[in-house]
Image 1 (cartoon, rainbow, N blue to C red):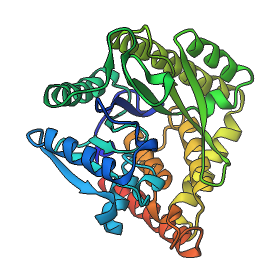
Image 2 (cartoon, one colour):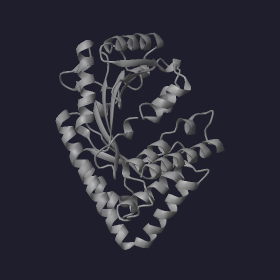
Image 3 (cartoon, one colour):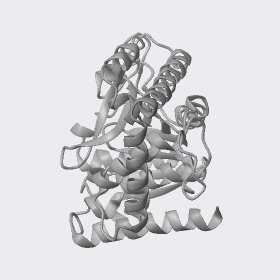
Image 4 (cartoon, rainbow, N blue to C red):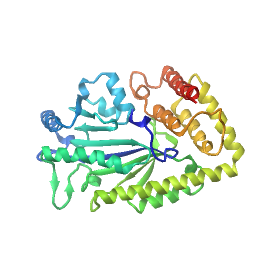
Length: 341
């Protein structure tokens, strides 16, 4: 999976996502389209993507394994995969690249990379967007730019976002407010990640761009680099300060969390995320050869816990088996890392 590769600043940034939204000229937006128009638009986009190396998959023909694969890699929301409307997905040959068809926009080109790398994520998505623009008529206004169903994305049709783990900032009084104000200067927003039940995932946040009109694509990428640099610098500073002031608490929670992740037979997602964030707080300060988790493995565990199709699927949701399977998967990953170390 794309998130198993090496990335930059992975002690703080789990992933970078670039989305480029485009709509077909002459069609209503998907929310107002009938089934016939949806089918027609889907066929046009499939034909336009014919020479780009994508695998076309209709959502109404996917089996559970295909849905799980797309969901677990962040490509699609559960509702999109299980909607009875005429929707589909284009899966790229390059890992981390895909296109949702007939969701909120006719097409949303998604490019994911591990860690912090807005430049390469944007280049991959932009190449696909340019090819679509060559192969079909795209809804565009000389005055406004690319037209989208959501006014926020009119202009470039571009959104850049980062998934970050910032327990240090969250546990430091006033730090989150400072970060939010810095982000606002660049028309960015920071939001806590919510679970399906509406509860926050401790320490997990999404930082994303919120304005595209009047801003060029290159300016948005430059802003992304500035914003995420601020986040990484502040989080690292907060972790060091917390470790200095509360070294015994951090050390105790670090080892408790590692032990529970290593040996628990049932574990809920919220518990696992909380334990992983205690490990993040201590990982840079505590040197122990017996703890074999590096940043890549910590992030892999986080992704596996956060994106588990079985935990949101109506057939398996909230069952004891899900908690047991999650614990089994966590132990397997930790044991693999220990054996390799």
